[in-house]
Amino acid sequence: MAAPSVKGFPDFQRLKILAKDEFTSLLDQMPGRKDLVIDGELMKPLDRIASVSLLKQRGVDKIFKFDSSLKSMHGCEQRIYLVRPRMTTMKAIADHINSDRNINFKRKYSIIFVPRKLHTCLSVLEYEGVMGCVTVSEFQLDFVPLDKDVLSLELPEFLKSFYLENDQTWIHTVAKSLVRLQALSGEIGHVYCIGRGAKMVNDLMNFLMKRNSSEQDFSRHEIGSLILIDRDVDYVTPLCSQLTYEGLLDETFGIKCGTIEFGPEVTGKQQSAKLLLNSDDAIFEDVRNRHFSNVLGYLSSKAKSLQQDFDKRHGLKSVGDMKDFVANELRRLKEQKSVLANHIGACEQILGKKTKGGFEDYLQTEHSLLEGSGLRDNVNFIEELLFKQDNMLKTLKLICLLSLTQNGISPQTYKSLKTQYLQSHGFEQLVTFSNLKSLGIVTDQETGSQAGTPLNKVASGMAAMTRRSTFQSLCKKLSLIPKSDDIDLKNPTDMSYVFSGAYTPLSCKLVEQVLTRGGFTGMEEITKYLPGGVHSENHVKASKDHSTPVKDKSGKSARQDRPVSKVVLVYFLGGCTYSEITALRFLGKLKGYIFVIATTAIINSSTMLESVMEKPPI
Image (cartoon, rainbow, N blue to C red; front, side, top):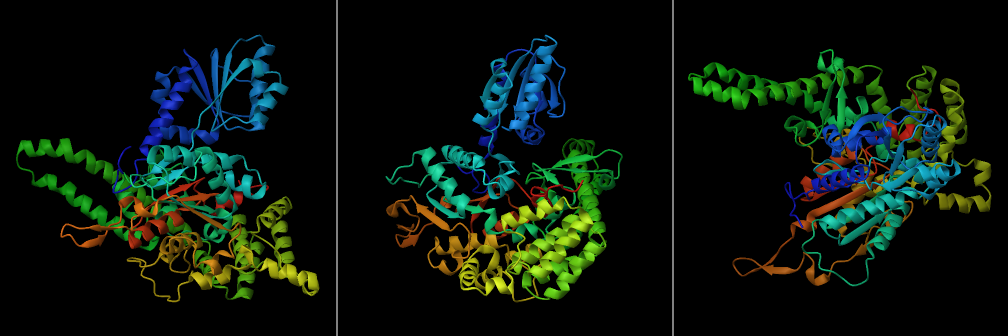
């Protein structure tokens, strides 16, 4: 077993190597020249583990993006489909095969399901009469390492599938990803579950690992604790406007599988530029977790420093020095200059968008909703956005925050806002409101006459114990809204800096509480408000625990914390935002923990709402 790699982080590049080996093995099962048809959702994740040159080495002739609207496709005599297990996809593949059969074109077909095959998909192939024409296999691509501390399943559909449609298909994928991770880094001793899905994942993980009751020695393992969090425990945080540099990059340009594409308006050239955003980029690593107000100043000072390094060439006297400068320094400086220019261009674009369209007023309304103040003014602001037919997602975000922070919306206001929204953005959004109501994100409060009956009083009292009616209570008990308005955004001392000191992410605060208390003991007044309940398991022997006294060099008793006890894997089911990742990184520095963030997908307010909208904006 390998030791932790970068500053205590486990070496997750092993996951990439295993995935690459597994995929190339699957390609080799069809020797010779073949075409590869890839599901659009899988193109970027596959690009992170296998290059085009590697595919060419394995006999791949042409690479196509899968298009379900095409009834037929041209190509060579062998074809591999790399797809998600969906019934509609199987129907489209069957159409391709039947189209070839109709013209008597003989071709070999292989379908690789990612991450696993489902019986429903095989049934479609049988019904269409093509099951005998294809070979079927699985490619268990689960975690894609986006950075040294970020792992993603790249499954944005998990939120809608599990929380809205109650489809538990992807629970197996999440559990399997944890099983494979622990096969590399060792079993995790402490497990904490927050939410219904988290408990289901843990139970299935234990079943797959065949974990028995006998205790094991976890002293040599790389991850000390696992915290599983359901997204429905905290819908408020992803709906808040992100204000860190990385978060704003995602909201403004969109970060796909750790990669961002800057257009000509950023690069200042005719062609676009693609950047891989991770800790290998020293400039990005320095600014990614900063509040945006401190980014442009830093980049300007970095540009001046870079120019001074360039100017050193004028002071070179010998030919040897000049040759050494050109060979070693010049290329590095030019690369840094190019990257720096892109980040400065991105900042200018972000500033241009945030200084227009009343962003300050929007942010003030958002923060007012989080504080639970100025209700009438907030509703008026939302109505004003509807009258102007402003961006439909921006307006919907505020309606969602109004409901989540105010125990639902009063029936009269709910009806008014809903009607105005439908009139402004189309009546197909009626389904969107139905979906949001099912998720508990946008709900209406009970009317006075309904709440007046004894039965409804009991029901109302029970409803008060749910997440969506207790946000202000959680704010008070966990101090989510800082009392002081004077927050140092340049040298922060609290996680709330990611939202300009207006709000501390609930999910991250729960992680802090669990680690501080060593579990859920003493958190009963908090956990009773969390949907799905909580659960914890401890598989570490007491005698092997990191709190066991040991002798130091002088022979005196001293407490020695194993590094592994400070490595914590936080797994978000339903997606997490870059703001939450930044907040956890800051908490790690503050408390001495090494956080590894795993998630089903990286999301933001727009992508989260689009996933449950009937007709997302184009």
